[in-house]
Length: 478
View 1 (cartoon, rainbow, N blue to C red):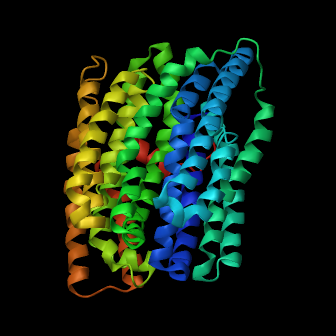
View 2 (cartoon, helix red, strand yellow; view 1 turned 90 degrees about the vertical axis):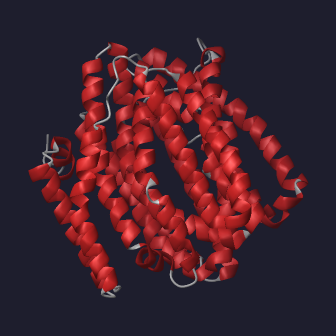
View 3 (cartoon, rainbow, N blue to C red; view 1 turned 180 degrees about the vertical axis):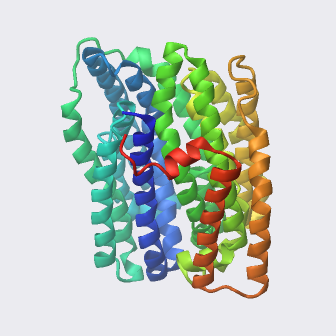
């Protein structure tokens, strides 16, 4: 299956995920209110943080190793079984520690009911094995399954979440999507792979499992842990502001993450074959696609942050506007990180470099959390995230430039051209704001204008071939 088809399915998957969120979140945020949303998001972040200890590096390691041996059925069975058993041992240990924390950490008492439900998420995450399906590049199945489950989730939200007291139901539905996906995935994987005991080696995968896991844990210092720290320091309302501010960023970055997820197994194969010419070509195409999408999205969201927050969450969330404006440039920053780390350093097996990146980012996050969050709350947490990601990007650039076959791989001139070509649109945005054009109709008009202008610039001026292939020709059969 060619990259273009995989990108199509992965893009549909990601867009549907966030489309369903954009359908439910405005409803849920209005029904539950900012404080209850903060409670739910705190619990979600805590469970997600605990999950990092059970999954460790399986999400990265699994894709890489499955992609490497997917042509050999016996080796694939051994690889899958080894990784699954390793994940199972980690999950069992973490579940015991999680239950102990819920019952013996006083700060978690107010969230105990939600965290009981979260136990199911930790358990069924073991059977999700999403890394396996990404490794064999079965994005068609992932897409169809996820859309079906998300559709049921949306229906259940509108039927069952009717008042602020229904916030445990809302949290339970979030966990329920993991449970259902896990059950369906575990049954479907039998079509491709089976569990075996012979030839299984946990020792072989243990070092990268922990190294990549520590990378994800340290990365969480400025993602999941950031929310937990803000919750302990500033309370549930500040968590509500911060998570609402990051919601639009999450949606937009997810669109590019769809492309990155497709490219990682392909890059692993190319590296294994020693075809660095193709690696460079695909990497530069990835950067060009990122710049074409991220730059206009950042400009648009910075200009219309008040309208977008109002549309997303309604009244009472005005304090999320400034955090959103601080966070939005991360669409570009983290997009570049994903190319450097996920598409290049990880397939090159530069696990030490990936680990050092995360240490650097975590150190910056720890320092800035202490310095900023107590005084500036959700605004401070936003700056913590931005400063941490910038430090990781700088570190990743250092390690990439040390690879002789990858030096100078980032098309900086292309980034500057994209920024310069956005300046005329910025003038229009500012004029619209100055004239008081704040209606939903004006927002939709500016969005359509942006899409048309960007398409014209990329096709006629920038001559971005990959942009044309992905966004103009995807409807054509191969």
